[in-house]
Length: 169
Image 1 (tube, rainbow, N blue to C red):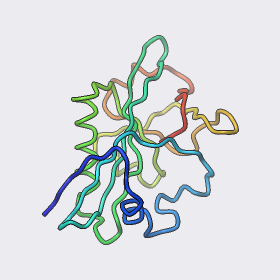
Image 2 (cartoon, one colour; image 1 turned 120 degrees about the vertical axis):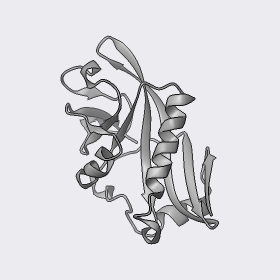
Image 3 (cartoon, rainbow, N blue to C red; image 1 turned 90 degrees about the vertical axis):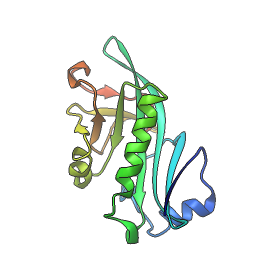
């Protein structure tokens, strides 16, 4: 039986279950980035066993002369023994549906490893061609990971670097 829960904060046990199976389950520790926490977490359980997670946050930005509200998607993970069964895809859809329907965002934005770009493209995300500038304790830097956007007319994004005005998620 599959159950999906929404929580504002995850317990230490939930974090250990989802992220404790590897020292760096996302493969980004070497980048030394500071990450922004998520506002809402989607947890998927199979037969009462926690197997997958997606986190989201709401973030306003200026794009040229326009204000745009984004849903930031991050922390997408499925424990190894449950991968390849569509659990993360289910949570991504649930999270983006909530963000567009309830939060009334204009677009989604995520950061991912280059090897994950095809995975997100199959789910309707597109690579954001211009660079993204993210905030870090040392100052603003170009994001060292590809950024992807979820449906929004890409012509509305301005040319040149896109300044996020926050740490990546």
